Image (cartoon, rainbow, N blue to C red; front, top):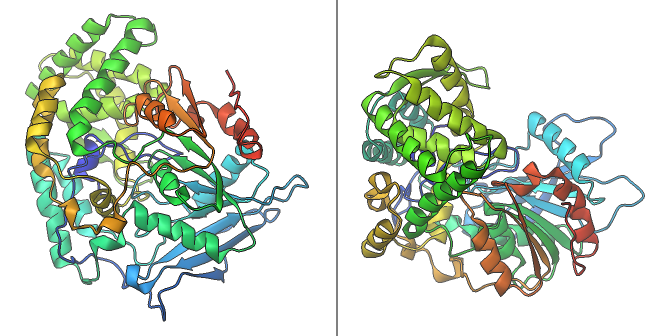
Length: 511
């Protein structure tokens, strides 16, 4: 899977097992016409109803486990997708009848329904101990979905550009041209913007629930973008009884116009943490910001070429680390508290260099620090075209005057944010009204909202405002915590069963 240039800046690809890469909401590469994509043709269906077909599982798993698999066939008039579904059955005598449907981050992330992914989900299931069946489904266009919305020619261009010292604007421009070429030269012209979006995915969840009558009631466990999808699926749909929403991403948040604020405030929050914590350097907030500016100036004048190892065994990625790519590393590292000390370490290495000369040990260490960023960017578990398609359906068109006003109010890194509004290529108004999100659609079911106080991408005040609108919700903010709260605080994952068992009772957490 390619590096999505837009993922290297601003909006993270959120997932439960990993943290780290930014995705700029501006990376929208299609317009109002149906455009082709390099993939297989859609699944033919005889009618416009959902259907669930039981199939043999396509992966291996321990013989003591009971796992069943199937494919959800979506209506032909919404794309005719075939979506893989995996059900890990609870075998204990304490089994509850209402399953938990897991909704991963993204949009554009696969559920990871392969040998390695199932091994992970079995361990995750054991830690969660929901005492319920746990269900996973690949979203449209991702993973083993048929059709799969991928763009192979973008991969090569992505890796080529990372070797070059070019501006952020030029990186987006060339990435945009590369993605347009993918569409233009694709073999099949079935793609329709109306086949994607959170509302469309919520309909798929309804289709799955209705196709499995053995489960009359369901629970949803969403992380990051998965929380937005959970809310859309639960709204006016009583089959959903309760939700745990980790790092809430409500409708109406995260639009392009808000990114100068999101980016600025994420850096400011981290600088405040660095001010008070010796794991950073114990320096003042002002000193951290000053050092960051020096790092960016140094890397802009003297970028460093690094050979970054890949975790999949492929050839290392040649990364030309310049100023805006360092910002990607910085922002992505804020997601995970375990990576916070790496930020100050990387800054010290840059500032300790002399006109771009790095001793071998420093260059080697810098390449190690960039591994998480680069490997998540080249992951085969993320589908940039799906991200673009869903995001176009969900977001509002950027207004230049509003964007520029935000730049004035949040100027910390205006040099990197000022012109990026121009890269919004999609007109969200092409999406029919029934397929667009409505921020006022708040579900009635009980929900547990979990936030990290230093989360850079879904800041805690979003969840706080959502909680105030949602009478049946509870909200917990965890201190010194980034994104994906249940990853950092495993005890919250272990205690989620208490909420699912008694969603109307106060959740005490695990302090």
